[in-house]
Image: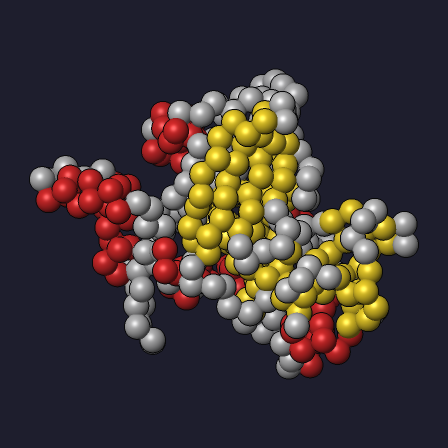
Length: 325
């Protein structure tokens, strides 16, 4: 049974393979990208799983091939990366503190946003729930392949991991958004900059992002259990379990999708969207200070392969200067 799809590159070019529950890979005949496979499925009115089964070829080894991000676009400007925050329940202790603070008349904007989601983030069928926090990260040029470095800008306060699930979408010819599946990711943000002033959240999110190689087909399990860790000099510096899936979220995935795709500019035919669903687990909250050379690793039970990326710092480009014409 096919569980997920991956994109890879080797000496012969690009290819797409299907992974089964045991992690065995089978090449898809005549397919060079998941996006092309999805466009074909939309045209034929089939699911990705149906098309993958129809094109499933011989078993291949993933040794010696380069794994790619599970989605891309020939024109990176037509791949939009965004996300939502304050969507995960976190610990019962943390939620209890927020409720007590709100009852005492003290609640930050973040607390109010979380409590709004807890109360109205999972509407019934045909109903609209409360809208979540939303942020923009960039276009396809910021998407980092598996094992490639995550670069924080020279001006960044830090480079911090965010272990998350991302929804992967493709708009059909009439603008209808199709969910292709889910990917494990490291949303990667600048938490030092964000903590200076919450209005700098937008600045803190304009960073690269990494996806694991797998596109998980079908529904996301309600209870996703994973581990996020940072390795330094080959040793584990920090490690924490993280939870995702709707059982651990204050918003339903349907509600998050509605409040993203309700905007007409996000339903442009042919565009690809990568939308991160948020997390409640950060090394920054444990006062970990990352440094160049650290290795981020994110793994989860519904994915065969982890997300691994080393941290680097980009060169100083100096003051950005605009030339008048």
